[in-house]
Length: 338
Image 1 (cartoon, rainbow, N blue to C red):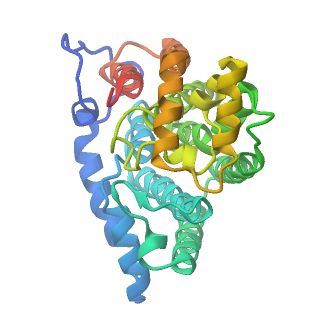
Image 2 (cartoon, rainbow, N blue to C red):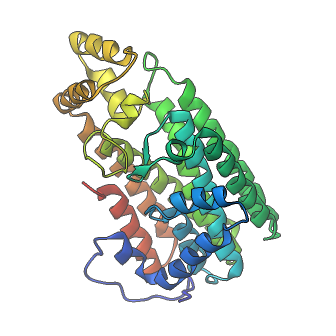
C-alpha cells in the first residue's frame, strides 16, 4: 500500500494496542522482509548459518527495519531498494547485538542464551563482523551517496556510544552523559532507518530531516523505557532483572538514584557497585532504593518528554493513516510492557 503526502485519509477511532496492530498498514512488506532477512543471510558456512538463525529468528520486533518501510511509504512506497535498506538496518543492528553481548559478558538475549554463550566469543564477534560487512556490501549496491554517507556517519556514532558507555564511571555519572550515550548507541539508528526509507522513496532533504528528528526522539524514548524495564519487569527485555546493574551500566534509573540518595544510601550504593560480583540480593536492594526515591517513575516521565518530541516532529506531515501509525508507535514505545 503506497500512500503519498497528498493523501488525506480517515483515521481509526480506536488506537491500536499492540505493535502488530500498529504496523498492520505495512504488514505485507514486513512479511516479505522477514523471509528475505532469514533467506539472504544463508552461506556455505554451517556455523555462521546457525548463529544467524539463532539471533535473527529469536523474536526481535524488527522495529528498526519497519521504520525504513514506514519512511518509504510516506512518499513513493516500498520498492526493492527500500527492502534492501531495511535488511541493511536489521543486519547492522544484529551485528551490534552480537558484539555487545561479548563486551557485556551477557548470558541471555531475547530470552534465549546469548550466541557467545552457545558458540563462544570468537564465533559471536566474527559472525557480527560478517553481518556488518554484508550490510555495507548491500548498502553500496543502492548507489545512493547520501544514504551511504548517512549510514557511515551512523555506524561511527554507534561505536562512539559503545566506547562512551564503556568508560563511564558511576562516580562521575550525570544525565547529559547518559543522553549522549543513548543518542549515539541507540537512537541514531532509529533516526537513520526512517530517514533512509524516506530518501530512497523520494523525500526531500527537509522531509528527510523531519523524519530523522522523529526517529531520534523515538529512539531516545525507546532506550529510556528499556532502561526502566531492566529494573522493573522480569523477562520483558529478554534479560534478567538488573542486568544493567550487573554489567555496571549507569543508565538513567541508577543515575537518578545516585544523584538523589541521601548520604547513607549513597554509601551503600557505592559499596554495591564496588563489589566484585553484583548478586540478586544486591539488585533487590537497589530496586527497593529506586522505589524509595521514585527513580523508575522519574525515568518514565523523562521518556514521555521524548515521545512528545517525536509526535511534535510529525506536525510537518499531513494527517494520513501513515502519520497516525507513527504517532501510535510513539505511544506504544512509551507504554510498552508496563
